[in-house]
Image (cartoon, rainbow, N blue to C red):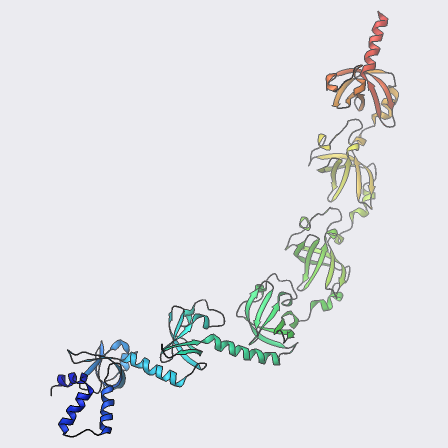
Length: 557
């Protein structure tokens, strides 16, 4: 019978084949033979797995004898390494289809491998078992891992913390735990994270049972925050607070540590109930405060670096771990310091004197000003009353002028000591900020750190001789209007001698505004109606002087 006819007869009814065999033999097939024959026929059904032998190898396909009268072809791409396949090799293939026209059968090694792999997996493993496999590729939602068949490793189950790029696992061997086996869909989900968490839990319990306060342990820096760093001790993270990192000042933990760095730390405290561990780095070394009293006794002069500035003062580092405070009141003998930044900046090197040391509180009080002698101690000798000085106008206020007579020492020139006679409403009428002026020291208060100055005292007081000898009540004199106010006018009789012409003494009639009668710069004839040399006051009257002049004219007539 031709080969093609035999192949076509493969598809005819099993019962008909059985009858033909019986007719040919002339007897009924025993039950055992019939059963064997039935199994043989079933093995060539589409979808069944066949054992075949490699007959030929081409660049595109591998020809396989499936054990029947017809050969089958397997695409060469289904072999991982075609160079390892040899003629005569026995392989398992899946019968995918029978091509009636050509008589060839279409085979698949890949699908056969998958079915066998699935059968092996479901036979060998169950949910919860640990398996190893190599990551094949990345797919939506996770990775495919080769366990003989591709299994799904979700991205959320790759690690305890979701990795930045799951593609970095491709080609690597991973150990996972089987989460779910779905036989109906032939799908398996595995988890690497579950395995890691279980292992970490065991490590944690062992760590908590062994760890002791005071011992040294090595760990890996896992995370860094503003307040400190978390160190993995093997199953549990301990907190290394920023204040326990260094005896010196650090602004951020990243100045000392980096993620992934191995560090040796000291166990400071263990709370097994809350599963919290406090760690220390600086405690591995002796505290610099141990010998601070002997190294920095009060009165010691030393240098340090400004490391921090607060509204109340500046912190100065004397050495690593040792800082002292220069209070704002200890920055200058003479300057009125409102903000420490007026005197120092962070990073400045300053000379200081140790005032006080408190070892228990780890505090040192420092002074910048006491490095030098207090200039106020000799101020009375240097600036005795009557001393003429020159200084720069540093500030103008409504009540006077602050004049810097030497660096850091200001004297106050009160508005009342600017002129003997001129009525000064504000110092800006006479002085400008930054100009150099001459003045006389009037008094010095060492305790209150005050120096009183005057400029009018540079000249003779015109009232002492000129007024008392030259003028008297009732005299009619001439003068010039120098200033108008709402209550009258000031009239200068001569240089340094000025009197008040009250508004009620301007005219016989009621005057609402002095401008209605006189103007600045106008020459007027007035009568002296009041004279007080002690208080330097002259009262004048235009009204009485005018009436007197009118009376004299009438008498002449």
